[in-house]
Length: 198
Figure 1 (cartoon, rainbow, N blue to C red):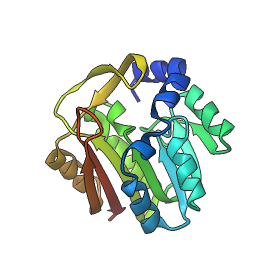
Figure 2: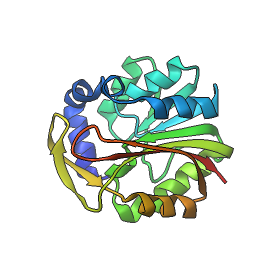
Figure 3: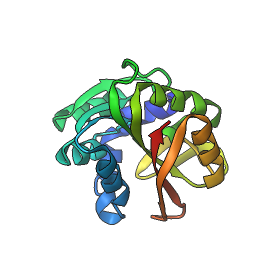
């Protein structure tokens, strides 16, 4: 993950948590339901877990959850919520091949440069078991830039994608789409995917 973005999350983890804790109450949670539907009670790696908002939901749904985030502050918050959590880099996930039934990356991979997306997806593909399930949330757009948003008054890198652009990258990374939805919680459209490892 981008170093400046990690620094922002380390400094402002609580502010981000307060701003986003009720996200799935304000907006449709269909994507999480579909993910759980496809994975059952499997072992899930929450890639870019943040403070554990989604990890808690997945755990309550019966999944065995491990949170991974590059921010130590975020990982400490996950642990406070009773989640197993590890500090780690998306580009070198610290787990063995085929060790998870599912991977969940909701608006976390948008914090890496577009040039690194294929490598990050290769790592997710590597740690998934055959036919593993991958839940991905991306924000629609074309640019890559630093933004100040979501109650966080320091810069974070955001890489935005057009739907056909990210679908091509996902296909090339060895994932097949099984479900897609979109919604617009603010000024930008969210692109939500459930995929399976080929």
